[in-house]
Image (cartoon, rainbow, N blue to C red; front, side):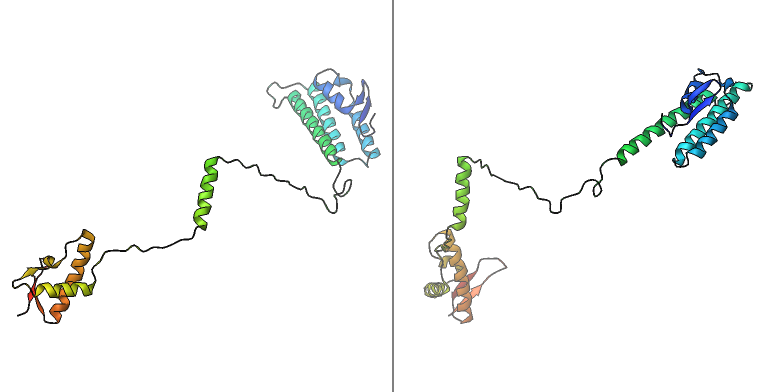
Length: 240
């Protein structure tokens, strides 16, 4: 039997205290034959002879003995049916708590008994890492290959900037044409009549150049300009 266990030797009972409490709760032991005085004396003797034990264990046994005495007093004294709480329920609750406490202590002891790093096991001074080997598995269709080639080819192809030849009328040509045509006309003529027969793009360029040429000739005093209102047709004729 474990030396740390409180074993009682009373009139009508010989065994552990926790077992006596469990049997007394189930009314399987006659508590009237149990001497509370003998119980207290054996408990004090147990505490005196086991000073090296942990204090919690002795405290648990003290609570058990106190509940055992309480149960016996409940048997000896007249029981009040309205008394709360019920001694049997309290004894059952105490037993469950003690069992739970014992399970927690056992789990804690097993946990503390495991190997500890730095005491029972030691880490390596220079741990070696794991080398990762990666192998690429390429998956591509023919369209992906052609598209990738096209993008690379577009980036590396030399860029050539070609300026398209635009058909325009220069200011010198407009001055020469307006000067020549305005001398052949006597009355006022709209400026569009001095433009050459050409496409729309050249016609717009010729109109802009002819307008600037007309302003220049008017500044030189060679022609006269007339316009009835803003954005109205512009007329011009040679100065007499």
